[in-house]
Length: 492
Ligand SMILES: Cc1cc2nc3c(=O)[nH]c(=O)nc-3n(C[C@H](O)[C@H](O)[C@H](O)COP(=O)(O)OP(=O)(O)OC[C@H]3O[C@@H](n4cnc5c(N)ncnc54)[C@H](O)[C@@H]3O)c2cc1C
Ligand SMILES: Nc1c(O)cccc1C(=O)O
Image 1 (cartoon, protein in one colour):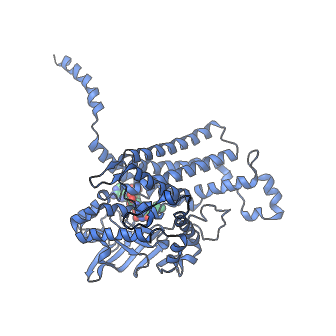
Image 2: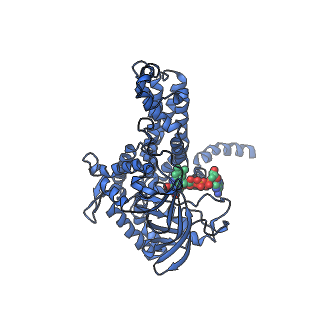
Image 3: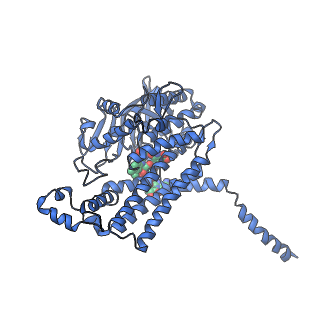
């Protein structure tokens, strides 16, 4: 098999019947559901890029084991050059979606590739788990599959651990072992793009306490597995809004969902971890499942931040305000943020380390710095877009108004931009901006940047403590030597 085409992705999607709930109704056919139709086509486009002569050699490679061409997300990076090959697919997929779809197939395929290369970790606890991870990676790679994931407990009572919740199966937990597999019950959040993916992987994110053993789980299942219920949030576009009026919301609605497992049987060959809180707490930091996807997210986040910065700059130019100091100051700040992330990515790749298992790991400090900065920089770019766009963001007519002969003269006369910018150009740019800085669609993109990789506050605290453990603070010691001299004097 190897790389799929968009048509193959869609055919396989059509052949599945996941239990998807949307706005109070069970979705009979995901591909025909207007809310999902365009996002499916956008994902299909990514698969087609793998066969496009412009991208094929950049984003795919020939697998040494099978001789098939596979996506670079499945490449185990062994060198700087391999990291650059991985970056190529992250960048190509991000640019195809302006960085607005965070969970494109490359994201989780990188996670599973990392778990595969670090199957020694699972071996330590259970050789079958390690074998299952290795087999699953090969299955994903050879079938070029698209995963969703839900590694966070639903937001119920965050002051209590899973085993202390009112109902012991509010959070996903193991119920019993059977000859066919492990029976699991409960919920996990927040499975982005779940309705249009092939499979779901559940893996553990640190935070398990003694008593949480039944919740210590990692496994993968086909998205249409019986008993798996996918409950979507309210859609932010109904699939009928025009590309003109909502150039981004109409294309890139990245649905989020709660997953409810109703005594679902996980076959034993799909169980990667179970009933072991030490393993569950260490999986994320020890298998590269935290660091390697941060490379993908950093590249994607850079593209998204660059896109927002470009839109803000275009808005300012369109209405002739980028000559003013305040606007230049704000836009200059966005560009400096953008260049900071670009530089940090180069550092992350260049200052990679080779692990004892031969994996090229992008630099932790640079990646964590990106992880902590993007949740601040992206909201700031949206704020600047709102400040510069001002009332003009609420002035745009609709495409229907443009098409109304009675209105057309007024539209052409009164919606123009600066000299040389027609009404159509000005309104089109302001509609891009409004999708990003006004619509619920854009607010989700902002919340995504804040929280897609965990709670930035707690992640920053972990980063600080890691940094503090390695920080020598030598300059302070050096500076205090001068004080020592005085002390000798003072002592005498
Ligand atoms: C758009 C979007 C897409 C997402 N996609 C996915 C996905 O595909 N897969 C996935 O698994 N997850 C996904 N997530 C979920 C994401 O991982 C979580 O949002 C993130 O881990 C934070 O958890 P939470 O949202 O439950 O916030 P909470 O943990 O409930 O935090 C809420 C508030 O309470 C504070 N708080 C809570 N607990 C503590 C504590 N112990 N100590 C200090 N402060 C605390 C937090 O700082 C925060 O201010 C997505 C999130 C968003 C917004
Ligand atoms: N992918 C993640 C997620 O979905 C939630 C929390 C953390 C991560 C991550 O990869 O760091």
